[in-house]
Image (cartoon, rainbow, N blue to C red; front, side, top):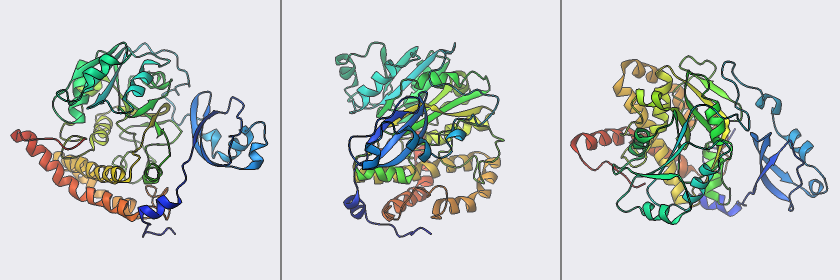
Length: 420
């Protein structure tokens, strides 16, 4: 059984060694890395991600001409990963045939962050080109994004001012101005795979699909904080395609209220008419509001409960730059806890049927949250700092009050923002 007392951040950092991430494809010869030690292989087959494999490179491996047999042997359930999970919505290939649906990409930002230029270039270099790219400026008076765009070689990127604070307002403003049949949303700190949009668009070929989410892997694992975020849970939701709907079975006792099961707001797309029909993102939730987060959890639930199917497509890959510093990670874990309980509070007070559903899941939810053996905590080692667990629990306790305060601020015209 795992320990529950955890370690100190300093103790974890003292033993930490950066882990290189190497991108390999099982359809090509894989040369051994130059140095021995721990690496992570982003394993693909035909361009489609099939695993994120921790691998210890030894001197024996360095003598081999091709590492493919070793990687195949170490990668669990490879054949199962490559099998579509659900009939009725075909699997998007690694390099998808162009969809007849038009696609708008919305990137939200409030300053020229270090990763923004790379994110926008990644959108511009898609194998399935976007029909429209909108950069939403959520701090237009002081962001400097207009100057950034004028000085950058980013043809076709349109700047849209969104002065109301909060990522939900920014995304809703992007949605209101988007002309595409599909609207894909991402953040300003990601590296976008070349087949991202193609695989997203291919997943919308079935008219019942209202939302598609994709795989999110770490950009780098160079600091203790980045490694700890992966232990916390990271963003990856597996390498097998999944199709969710309100009646899905086999997803556990918490379904559909299990946090993050559907994906993340940094990598999601919607049929534009469907997202508009449900009212878009809840502006009382999300980064930039007192609620601090939860807007992506909320909109995914809303789509499912409105009768749409949600497809998780691992071929729609992006790489996220996790926070490098421990204080930023601690705040992130706190905000995730607050966002989760803020979202649940919203749904508790808004709908009697959902209130009964949530009430029935409180005890299983507590076990899921607190048990060292739960699926949520499966990746945590004995070195995972207890202070991060406390930060998440504190956020969960504060979230309901933060949501109520967010609504009060919006109702009475107060300052409805927090530090982004």
